[in-house]
Image (cartoon, rainbow, N blue to C red; front, side, top):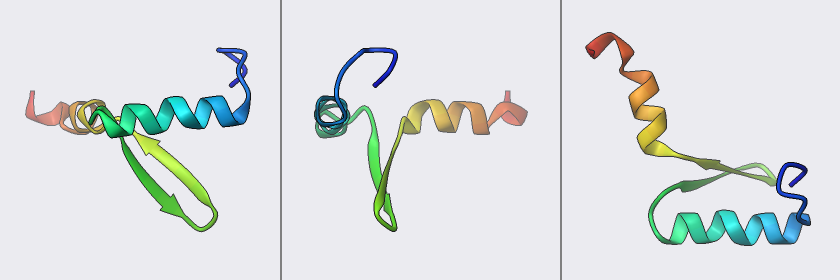
Length: 50
């Protein structure tokens, strides 16, 4: 929000759109939502395989 200078609602819309087109996944934990870039997460998590 701060970096893009947008409201929380706008940031949520951006993240939901990235989720809709398949670039991220949304995970709900309690009352909070976490958005994960799965491709990047897998790449960084598999550094030993390289």
